[in-house]
Length: 277
Image 1 (cartoon, one colour):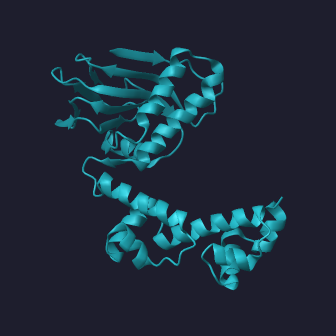
Image 2 (cartoon, rainbow, N blue to C red; image 1 turned 30 degrees about the vertical axis):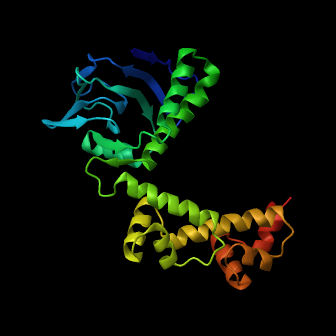
Image 3 (tube, rainbow, N blue to C red; image 1 turned 30 degrees about the horizontal axis):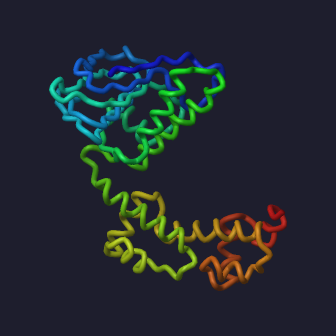
């Protein structure tokens, strides 16, 4: 199977990212490319869902199987291909973007970013919607094309790791599951030690992993979750500030007011007057 679509340039010129050429290959043993520098003036993203193949980088042949992917920047030399005996099932897209994301920056700096990703992260369904829209292209679908491509890139950010990365995907999933449980029960009297036990790590190891994966410390994440719930209660309930402080884990209203004002630039009472219905 070899399906591919070329999209016309969008009528609106200010999308943050937009696909140009995309496809879905399966049982296609002839899939192989070798492009000189400067030939392809767009990013080239390939995600392998089945089969085996390879990509060359600086003379090194890098195996690419299920859950592997590669991203080449604009104008880069590219050489890759599917194993004729066990050809890839691969979803791919060429695109342009003006946004700055870590995986794009890595591709730009190294002239090729190679990674593992979680095949069960929902990327297949996002690509499939892109394919469906491409098959019956309509101008009104342009915002959706841009949004789906952005969703693919952000999903990869959260569910991928460099081939030689220091944090395996299963650990990333474990930390995110812990973060979800903390968010759900943010009113509990969490400590670093209790959050660490929930994740199954020592406090030191948990702090380092959490900060690396979530981009903030566990205590900062907990405070953000509590503030988000407090803001919702301020605008949607008649609870007093003291009651909201108690129900969101701050307990002392004076401390709650101090933290809230530092984060939002106004006390809770003013926030309620400004944004409450």
